Image (tube, rainbow, N blue to C red; front, side):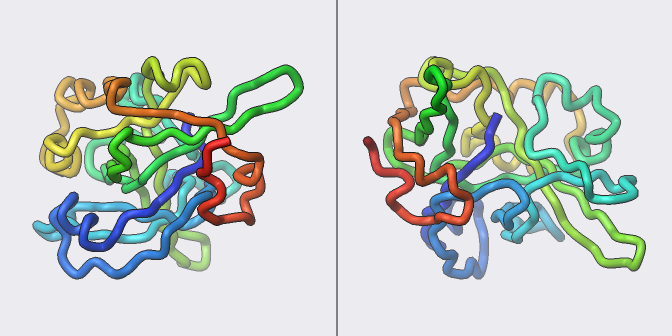
Length: 218
């Protein structure tokens, strides 16, 4: 599961991470929720390009936008007709600096902020698709792949997003690479020793609130 993200990465860092040209300054975000716009890196015309997509995958053949996919299980993504085209030809990377999960405690869900221990940004494995309304209006949407939780995330939730290693960015974005076994090896839980998690306030529960106080440790 991955239901909220943070993004606080400079344009210079983004350009270096993903070999990008002409990266705009992007405002820091501390509470990105599904249905909102999210940054995504795609390989277009022999270069990596940063675009902004709607978080909530809509299959190309859908008749409406009433059902979207925020996450998809990496273990079975190749088996799902909904993602059959995207897993082969429309893979993307979602840059992030952290994500949230909620731990059920009696009648209360305690939010936790989870990030890399060195505070660096990272890239999540994503899929994207273009969907059109009946009047021809086009939307580009995306979702995030998930895997089993590592030892940092497991006490909070049994799933976590697939965090790609930098050495695998090019492989993930390569449209000519379709072999499932090559992709499956990328879906391992990220090493727990490189991550930390801490409880945060309930501010993050309000999707209209987006400030740095969301990530402050309680």
